[in-house]
Length: 489
Image 1 (spheres, rainbow, N blue to C red):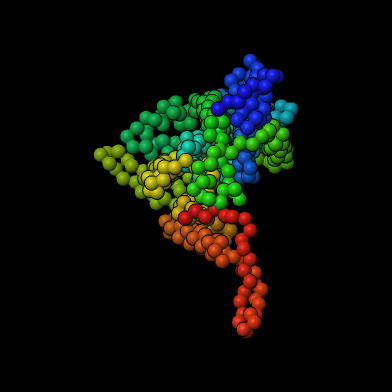
Image 2: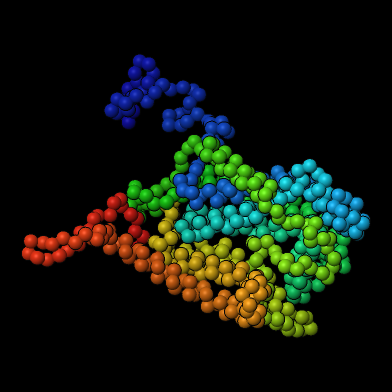
């Protein structure tokens, strides 16, 4: 019902409240004028908890990766043709090296700021993958993957293997001894694929191994295909964020669990200042790492020589769980219809990560199918309030951590004066016994914390003060819990 108009053209509602003058630029009542791009960015959805910054750090690290990578492409030559090295690094002068390796040395020693850019680029790749991993853990343990954000979960799950492949392919480009180890792993994995493994390896390497084309192919994968895919996922994630808004943690206003689950998405603003601060802080930390923390000194490793590897060479931390799985897998190999089936490589290098990422991507559907809960959620769970999910996450982290630690089985045996055979068998048993134990312990802790909170909500918190009643009895004083809590049953 609309009230009469005042002489100034102001419409009043039923209670006489002025609605303000109408204007053709404003449009129909209740609509705002179209905002500029800067205003929309300033009003964009923002998080209200420090753990949400992991996603921003991943985005800003990727921006640094693109900027430093664009700089490096002007000086890097993805060519495996052998030439005598005649650069500034004296110990390798006259040694036959590939043009790719020679250009990497030139970037490190002859290009102004080249070594800094190389190291910042490498550190940004490590931080990028770490931020994605932490963001996925935060989403998993708080239930941020539930409807309507299932597609957003798939975006971040997709970013993780893309980041891993980008980092792994980047280690191949310098064509040093460390990249030779990555090539050896690639050869073993592709050759372990039944039936088509040999042909696939020959096509990938362009004939003989290592061939003359593998660095060029991985160069375009590294600088073009993967960055475009990552940009597409970030754009999709941005659109989903604008559509659904941020989730939020439960607070005093969300004491009723049923009402809290149905509350709309969380939006506050403006946020341009805080976004700029996080971006500058990310760039500053990466610059400090690149300036003071040496990483990937290719001149110490030397050029790649087929059949050799650098002592103590290990992959990036994000590939450690694959290395550990390969190390502890028994050397099983069978012949099936005249074709060799190398389970010692096929299972840990292909089946295990394939199953891991499949379960990770499908977990929202799995949980929805098990619980039957198809509601919409904009308020996050505390990990203790979802005991089963938290226990599953703890079991997954335990499984991953044991495989990651198994990648150092030789170092553990050497430094602690243990048998390498015994350490390997310990990890073989632990990867099966550890996850169920972690599940049981974590679930017991979560249920215990939830039960204690329920008792405190009903009877108050114990103060430790004991008083005597007039009839001689003793009782402890309980104080009420301040602020309502969301108790998910």
